[in-house]
Picture (cartoon, rainbow, N blue to C red):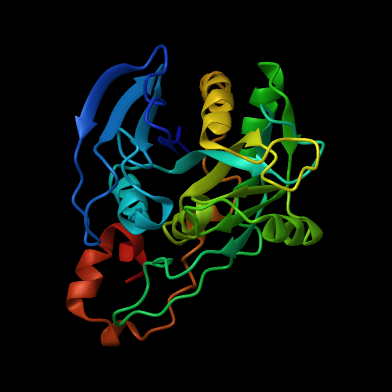
Length: 286
């Protein structure tokens, strides 16, 4: 086992982490088009890091406009083995206050029409997805958060909506009845594609507001989110710095073999062009 290459997907300030050395900007071509932006690579001590601003620098892309497949494929091509997703969310529970951070462990998908798989075009596959996040990586992030005195919550369900509008009050109340913990717009299909790509994935969900269900709090606004998010991003950077010191080696989970038995299609029936395009993902199984 070797030290993993760590990918971070989040806002366009997260690659400005203190102590990052050998910083380079890398553009990656993929069969699925262009990623959100160039990747920023560097090192924190002996750990290689790859950063990607999810919405592009300057926040140019809507959640529904993101090329999730290109983003994850690019991470794979750059050797990333573990992804830390840093995401702003609304809280759906009183106990999760604005400024708190949740290391979620489940997802509920309410998105519409997003490209959510690398399979298709002549190759059929189904990966196991009952437990969508990497448990060792999630635990490392949680423990790192506790050490830097962040207000942390371990576990919880992230409901991903299409957006870009925030929820209606009726929707927000229904989601609460479903038992979800936070609400966001970006982690699906990101988490699904990471599993297909055999990349460990965990989320730092940064609570910025109470959505619009809370009777004594203001309805969510962009101004409210940005104010809280500035504080949360600073804490997320501290958690990443702390987590990198004790990042688990690959081998303590099943993420790295997730696609081993997923491909159903007869290998002889898979088009040669598809085999070539998906080589970085499934080459060892084709």
